[in-house]
Length: 154
Image 1 (cartoon, rainbow, N blue to C red):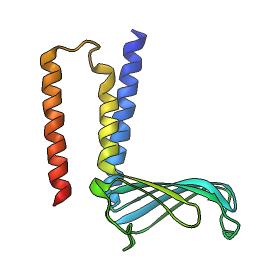
Image 2: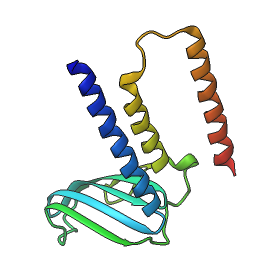
Image 3: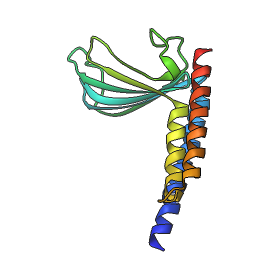
Image 4: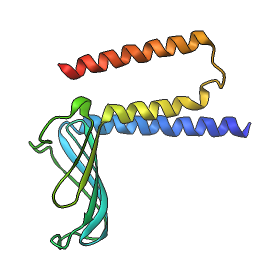
C-alpha cells in the first residue's frame, strides 16, 4: 500500500511539473525568463534561460572581467529579445560554448514536457510486457519520430 501511495505522489508531482513547463513554454514566446546561481561574484555558476520555445542551460566559468555579478540567486524577466543562436539547431537541440568559457545546452520545451509525462506514467507501466504491447508502442514511437523529422524539415 505504501508503494502505491508513493507512485501516486510521484505521478502527481510529474504532472504538475509538466503543466508548469507547458505554461513556461507558452510564456517563452513573448518573454525571456532567466534564473541564475553564482558561486562568486566573478561567475562560476549555472543558469536556466527560457526563450523562443527553448530552454537553455548555461554553465559559467570563473572570469575576473565580470565584477558586477552578485553571488547567490538572480532572476530576471524581460521582453523576448530578437537574438538567437547563430544556427538554429535541428528540432531545437543544441550544444555551444563561447570564448568567455561559458557552455550552453539547449533543449526545446516540448522535450522537457515529454520527459516529465513519461516519468509520470512510469510507475504505472507493468513490469512484464506482452509482445503485442511492445509492437504497438514501437509503432507509435516510430510514427512520432517520422512526424518530428518531417516537422523539423519544414
